[in-house]
Length: 215
Image (cartoon, rainbow, N blue to C red; front, side, top):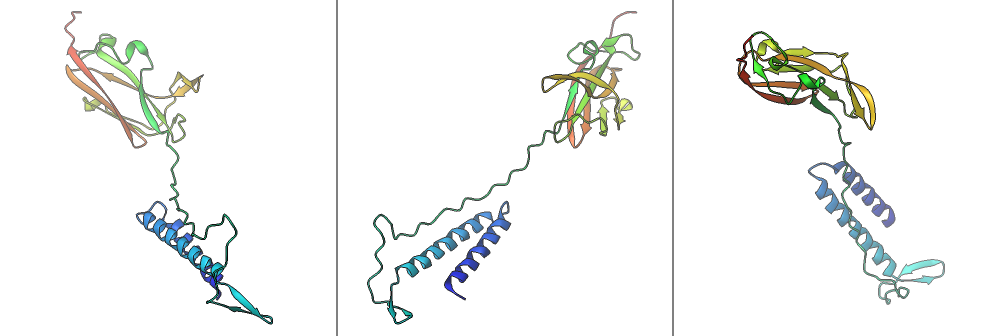
């Protein structure tokens, strides 16, 4: 096997090791090994270039005692060792998300809430919803949405939705599917509602006073 074949095999072996080590704990070790291999190859090649030969008949004989070959002007005989930068493989950015919304403004978030065993008006309950988006940011209408609340008797699981609400998507107004939930404030105090879907969770909290209004 010739020197060039040996060097070629060395470089291919180091390259394969470097490629298989990207993104692993051995990545930096592989980079260092690759740089060392490149330096070794360049040193051997430089020695081959600087070793002159004399010709006797049709046979070329190495002459180790002769003067080193003179390189053209402007060409350095110092090996150039390139730095092998690690290849960083990035994963696509996920746009998966869940968002709590108020599909009916006058019955949704940001209002005063009052507790009452039986509903008198919109002060005693809330209408909210959840928009679920997939990895590409598209609304999903067949996700499993688990809803848990302070009043566990009102907990609910929704597997599919047919409810839609007008929303702007990329500057265009479209009907976006959402998961609707109604919750009644039956007792005063702190209330929370938690939505869980696609491995994500979102929670909203309420401070509810007792409804002391007369009939």
